[in-house]
Length: 97
Image: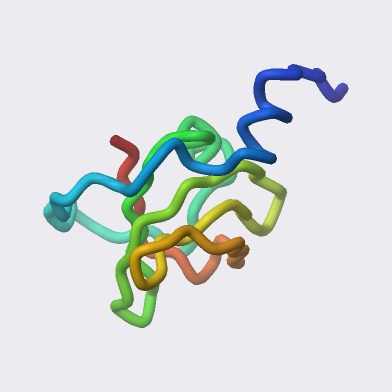
């Protein structure tokens, strides 16, 4: 069942409230997952989230939608936010702040 929340709809249209934090979170210790669970990354909705991809790339992300196999939102790219979506299997780790 889908729960409608007008606050989420407004936040999704407006995008992130400003630039991401200037700090870079440390790489978490321990084993890395083969794929990110949608339920785990769901707690990061509408929060600044630092993403590490399986290819080693890192960036700040502001998720606004989590699906069964993907996540969408805004990626910090050259000093601005751009729409972005990615397959959860490409994410090796993430940290919400």
